[in-house]
Each structure stands twice: as C-alpha cells, then as structure tokens.
Image (cartoon, rainbow, N blue to C red; front, side, top):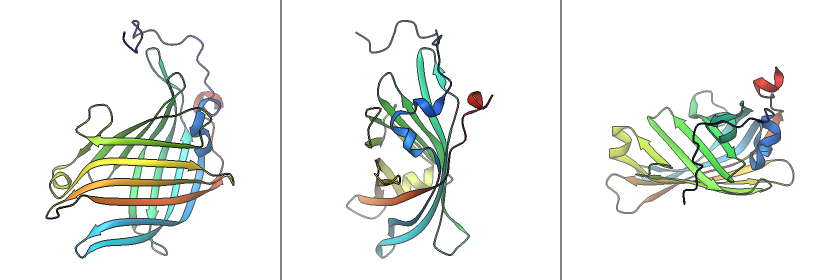
Length: 210
C-alpha cells in the first residue's frame, strides 16, 4: 500500500494560515539570531584548521505551502558568517526549514554560493527539542548536488545536521559534512557548530499580516 493518498491534486479545504502556530519543532528557531562563538573545522594544505566565526541568521515564517494534499509549514532563512572583527563574508547560505505536521518529517534546503545545493530530511515530533537531518550524494530525495570543481576536488558524500533547542531559549547546531578531498586517502569530517541567541522576534507570515 502506498504511503501517499490516491488523490494527489486536491488541496486541504481547512488550511490554517498561521505558520508560527504550526511549525512544530521549528517554532523555537523562528526569529533573528546571533552566534559569536562558532567554530569551523576545515581541510587546508597543511591538514586541518579550526576557524572561529560570528554568525547572523534570520528565520522568517512563510505562508503554508501545499503540494496537492500535502501541507508544509516553514521558515525562510539566510545565514551570513564573518570572521571576528572582519567585514568580508566567510560563509553565506540561504534556504528553507520545512515541517510536515501530518508525517513528522522535517526538511532543510540549503544553497551556498560555491555552486552547491542540498536537501536534508529527518523524522521527529512536534514537541521535539532535538532533531537530526541528513543528505547524501547520489540520493534522489535527500541529495547533494555540486558544481564540477567541488565534485572533483572536495566531493561531498554526506551532510548531517543536529539541532538542539536549549532550556535558556538559545539553540545550537552541529554539522558534519563528509568530504572526499583530492589526494587524501581518508574521508574528511568538516565540522561546523555554534549556539545562537535571539536578537529579534519573527515577523508573521504574509497571510497572517493580511
């Protein structure tokens, strides 16, 4: 028996347009955040280097999205990272966090301006304070796609993100991106981690404002 309904076209008739009220485990992430103690462990010519960073991330609610009977509630995000005391961008990333209440599936789309995109998927509950998502090279539903140079020199085989909502209102993430670096025998675990503190509340989604 298929996990999907026979009718793939009909949209829900009683759609709740209040995204903030339907974000499940993502509700705690909505808003504008800053993290000043980030750490990035990355490959360099000499081997491995850890770089500290300052992060600004904005996660704003979007209107509910439907794929026929499927309903997704989500946050549009933009992450901007610099080295302490510098202006030049160290990392920039955009995408969506999505929650499907009917199935307990959680999604993260990510795009970075190094010619790379990914879709990570996890399973959790509406009241969860910890959740994990993964993406893998070669998968068609939670895959990773890279431009020619990255595929040649720094191939990404998998991406895992673990999010923890902390009792003090902050939230933390731990990312493990497994790279195959040209000329090296062993996979490299590119680790990013930070704890974010809220500096502004989210803006309600357009339908709610209307």
